[in-house]
Length: 163
Image (cartoon, rainbow, N blue to C red; front, top):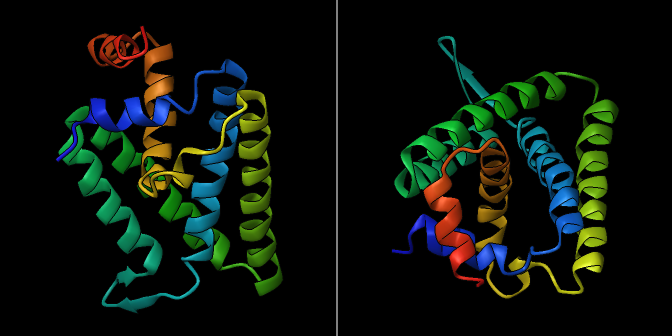
């Protein structure tokens, strides 16, 4: 199994331009929230519990992130839980409002992605490896963590692969 350093390094290879990273800091959260909103509409409730495709994906993704790195995985799990809660709230709106928020955030988020890759002069990572769609959200969270001066060893290990 690839390590977190492997995954983030492979993704970072497509994201060296600071403008591209900046667009991803906006676009990827929009896309994740949009997907959670759209996958929150079909849901099942029983005895105070609910189940939706959004929750299932959040749980599976959280386990994947936790296997890669416990602190970042825990942070990802909390953030994904928040997107599930937001998705449930938006899914409770009218169908037109639910679709407008879900589709709107999805389209705008991808627009940011493609603008960033225009700056980068390189195609998105998922074109070569579909795992890029899963690693993208982790990359954004890791970038923010690195900007805060945390996880220095991981950041240095990733950057070392580009020197």
